[in-house]
Length: 113
Length: 109
Image (cartoon, rainbow over all chains, first blue to last red; front, side, top):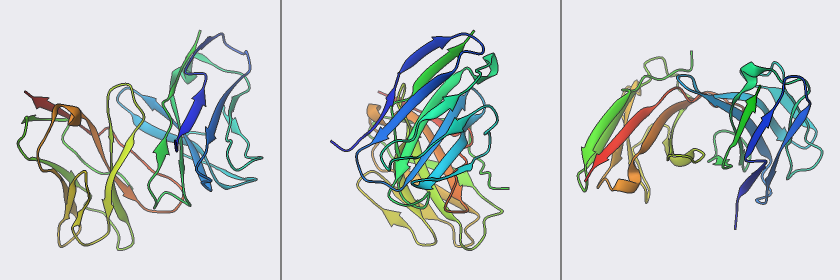
């Protein structure tokens, strides 16, 4: 089944403790992206990747890192999480870019205490 | 500004057509209009997209105004499973998508 998977689905952590949220797609897509969703703000893009080893900032990149060493994986790294990063995170992928249909993962709900 | 304007919420009776409006008055000639929807507790799901002409697919129809400053997503027969938040998005480049806050559609049995 073609899908985007994220792990973990739920995470509660404390301020400053490094964490990684994994994202993987099995559709051989070139484009991958991370979004966060907050009440009243909709979805905002954090980082995106047009292909392996090519990443760039979205609208709200502060406090996040990403890497794209393999085509299928695009992990989101929070080196020193803070409470304002408490949010619902979505990973997405598409064949080539945002002009194409994006497939979204199920989401990761992160709480930083 | 790549933002679009949508009503916060709409209601529809089950099995009736639904017309979800979107205003994108500052759209440029190469910008696409995409629609996604988000069902409760799920990630967004692609619905349809278009550039100038009206578009149809198995999920919905997209009617784009002649001046392209507005568009309407049409669900021909609303079902309870169509209850979701619908996002109208102006795609201005190959790299990012700005979702906005969308329209919450309630379907009344």
